Image (cartoon, rainbow, N blue to C red; front, side):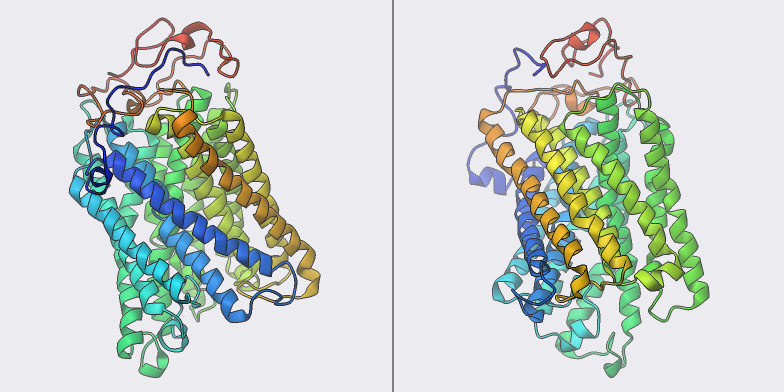
Length: 564
């Protein structure tokens, strides 16, 4: 480890108060971020458990483990839990809560009590969902398509929709808090185009959360009302319109894809810069592209509905708009690649996740263009090709970004490092397991295997066995960080800034004090203003060379003045 003679600060946010009340009634954004982290970790492994059950059933063509009803419940719970209770809140609610005030030089978010309320509302939504799991589950699919969900399903639809409603409400409050915080609480000198790209991505994400999530909340309430009171809204038998449900659901759920992926895009920008020690190429384009993605996300929902009686002209319009959203996404990938070009890259664990993210997100985005094309979508609709594409974006993108960010900022959160070797091993296992799990699904989807079926034609078995094997490897890759992160809390080597990264969050102690900064920081330079790296990094050998030897937070030869 490169840092020597580093010790934990005497008072920090973790030990400033003791007892369970100090956590459950805290208004410290850092502690609330950790509360979210614990909550979504539990939901992550619960949703992952259902995924493994699904893959176990699909080892053989016939229904050897579960009947159709049980299988339907498992894939519904897998989707509901991981989308609404992990992917949506993962980076914004955990890393966002912890980092936004630190990265903009503020003491806290704009509304600390509202921040705590957001977590409690999230917990209430989670309890509804756990109750559904305990009493028998739900079998509608995570899309809650009507009229099945409102009329025919015999499972716990109302409780599940209430759980989603509550977590959506939590998401709105979090987004509102972040928008006000970023607008009003930036440190002196921190102009919009000096903001870290992670902040830009969370700002764009928050706009989607505030504007799109209410539509989901209303939709879930209407499903519950129709199911409970038999009011004709979506069910044709009652005078309703099921296509109206799809419009409302996808108007939220496509932007929701960017609620999940935009924060990861921001994380990767931070990682690319920190581990190449270079300013992100085309910083302004990358920053503005986050806003462009947010804007486009609101006008492409129709590409989910090409086969729902949509007119060909409407379909053509949605197809063109869907292609356009690829432009700002491509800007990010091209600019990251340009940043890496001729860079001196350090292949630490966070960077491995970032590189994995770029590859998988690129493939996921390109296969999304297949589904945005009306002709191809007719062939691929509701097949495993869609499953593979979706998981490349959501797991290969959002989850890789979350894990990359978690490894990058872990020493900032707790002041201790995890074992780097195990981190790299875990990243490699995740990458191998992921690709083995989902690439076969592109093939079986193209060949015509429909999704949501628990039995399939025998010729698809080999590829399904490969996919199940990959899922098992992926599960191991996800469990490893849980083990070594917990280990590091007690035995990890003390670290303040092991990456020698720039940014306001690295100029305070690790872990930070309760008030974040001992003095009001003043920003005097643009983001990622790294000096020219004088020599190949030697952090892996523990030897220091040239200007890199200067401890962070100081001004020394070979480094420009730090922001203080």
